[in-house]
Image (cartoon, rainbow, N blue to C red; front, side, top):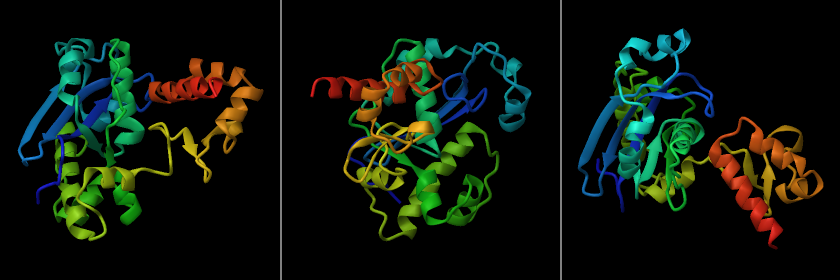
Length: 255
């Protein structure tokens, strides 16, 4: 089936040195850029992460240090990659919590602000979990009736994610074939940042969603405990979360 798009939608997947969004690096990126007319642009390339790939990570994606030794660094492809993503909505599998924040960290190291304003983020995993509670391999089997060959290969996972979303739209009449609606449905809670560290409560008030201040208004915490802001700025939080907190602090200080 054809996705109903008003602008390009990029499905992408990362293979990385690990699962720490702020510290780990990309070793492979794959994307399928779907245009409103239904045409697609595909690419998969490996990247030198400029750090050793742990054996545990290699065991998952089968990419070794030797495989990426002569590949370009992220800095070398950052500008062209940003141009490819420019003006596009974004889709992936567990992308809102992992792939997008990690990609933003990589861009940030290169001095590029990967702007999330105005974009829609469709997380196919969240749709799947709300509907069926499964993994990508099971999702591919459930929706597409096929076995996922080459799981944890970036292009295979990306292709499977695209196919799964199309089948999800076909299967569920209430799932609107519209990127804005899909993004809204695939979001988890009413998060302000992608990692859902800050969410909106029932009164549309930003509150922290973790740690000792979970459930407390951001406005109140910043007023009573200013050092908490400094702790987060210096802590192991995604750049997007820090940017959102800075924006809130600026907003509250000018009210």
